[in-house]
Amino acid sequence: MPTFYEETDFDISVDDFLEECSSFELEEVIDYLEEMGYLKNHKRTPDGNPAGIFEEEFQEKIQKILESRHRLTLEEEEVIKKISDRL
Image 1 (cartoon, rainbow, N blue to C red):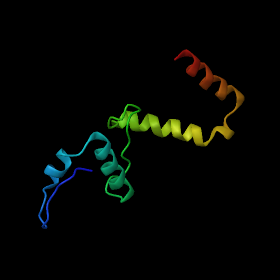
Image 2 (cartoon, rainbow, N blue to C red):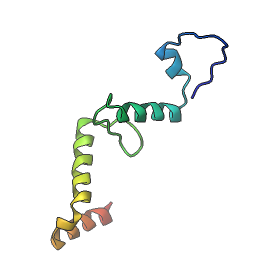
Image 3 (cartoon, helix red, strand yellow):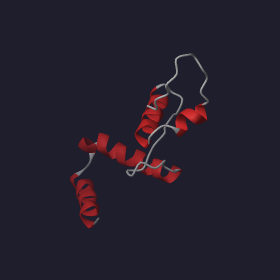
Image 4 (tube, rainbow, N blue to C red):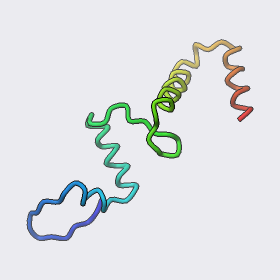
């Protein structure tokens, strides 16, 4: 986190604080806000950018497939493998 050297109490604006944060520290702030419930369903693309509604929907569908793999038929698994091999 940003380091401020001061012997007394003082107020720091949120903007000033966040502007001094590194990208990693900002990610920690976002993670904290998510854990505390201030940011709900905050999803990101694999490169770390905020996800749009279509990206969120796609991620939800992929996650559902991951969680339900045991329910897929052999044909469905083959379709997924073919798509993956093609990419």
